Image 1 (cartoon, rainbow, N blue to C red):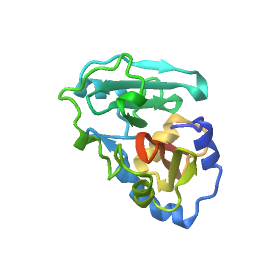
Image 2 (image 1 turned 90 degrees about the vertical axis):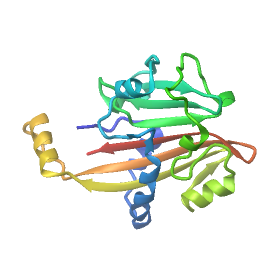
Image 3 (image 1 turned 135 degrees about the horizontal axis):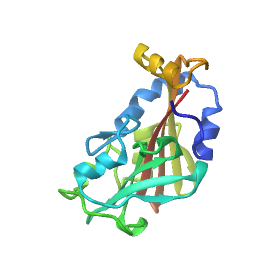
Image 4 (image 1 turned 30 degrees about the horizontal axis):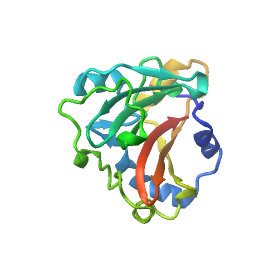
Length: 208
């Protein structure tokens, strides 16, 4: 089972009590968690992304809670990265993705997807590069937090474990209490230049 050791932003968020508005909004957060047919936090390793989209090297940086792994692809419209962190385990489970304009991203070592990404594929749940601040706020709701040219939005929920998941947790941690549910956080982190969205990341993390 996954343990809590994510970035400071998510660590602080998970210390907060869930409120009804966040729970009600969680369902809309799910629409941002699938890219190129891959769902975040669903047990898919980054190697499966490479197998489908084409060769590109695994890039790793940081240590412990600041560790990040990515595989990335460049196109004429954007640089697309599929991400994992310390919670992703040794097989680098897909937990996040990033989409950025080429001028705003590090494309060093990135491959080319087969077939290449086109702009329509990179509009996820209505979220897309080039959208205005007003469009971003209207899409994500009043809970968007702004800090200059950066914005973030978190969706929090709880999901009960299935009997099979409880059995797996019991086998994985003999003698320890078995959790009743996962705390799920979907986070959207965005950067703007002027009134246009130039990059964004989406993460989905489940912890007990």
